[in-house]
Structure formats: structure tokens, C-alpha cells
Image (cartoon, rainbow, N blue to C red; front, side, top):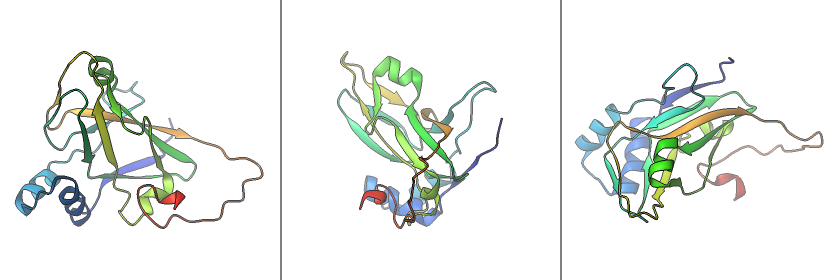
Amino acid sequence: MQVVAKFEKVSYNQFSESWKDTFQEDSEQTIKEIYDSITLPKRATVGSAGYDFFSPLKIELKPGETIKIPTGVRVRMKEDWVLQCYPRSGLGFKFRLQLNNTVGIIDSDYYYSDNEGHIFSKITNDSNEGKTVIIEKGDGFMQGIFMQYGITEDDQVTEKRNGGFGSTTK
């Protein structure tokens, strides 16, 4: 297997700013405790393709409810690689837990963006069976898989990323 990436935490300042924006939480002590407890993504077994992302808080989603989660994580990876993010298989199967963008795409140059490459996850409980999903703090809820990609022979892109999430189409 080829080593292509390294997960890191974003800075405390970036995490705090994102957390306050998402949850309107202003207790620095609470935010610091959450930040300090962040676990970097890891594989569960030697045969696992996906790196599990762990929830920084307890989440309870009734059918149709959505939450945006600042993970506190960023990833530095080789230039011709991408991190693709999906819900954990069991959560998708049992609760129809969905990522709102269906598949999260983390580009290699996102690491250098103005938000430090902070990875967010927006998830929805899409249950049509009336099931409430509960994800405990520290439980895996999303998985990321590294994939190599190619470009066309006439590719002429010279633009550099100058922003964070969704900035490449501005």
C-alpha cells in the first residue's frame, strides 16, 4: 500500500470559529474540551479501505433532521489524490443516514485554504421507517477513502485555490 496522506487537527482558533458559527456555543471551556477530545480518523482493521471520522459530540437526529458537524480535522495528501467521504455503512443501512452532498470530495489543495482545510460533514437522517439515529460522542459516523485520479491530456488548469469550502466555483 502507498502512503499518500496525513490527518491533522485544525488549529484551535479555526475550530472555535467554526464551532461557534455552527452551534452558537460561546463557552471557550466547552469548545476547548471538545477540541482536546478530537480523535483523528483511522481505519478499524488492516483490510478497511475507509478511515472512520469520529463524532465530536452526541448527535440525535429524528427522521428528516440535519446537522452540520465541524470535525476539527484536515488532511494533507499527495497532489493527484482525493479523499472521498461517505456515511459509515451501518448507519446508512440501518437509518438511511445520508451526507447532504451524497459524497464529500476533499481535494488535495483544500489543505491550504483559508479555513485550514477544515473538513465538515452535513448529515441527514433520511429514515422512512421513523427511526431516530443516535451517534454517541466518539462514535464513527463518516468514512473517508483515498483515491488517485487522472486528468485529460489537454488539461490547462493553472488556477490556485484561494478560499475554503465551495471556493473553486466562485
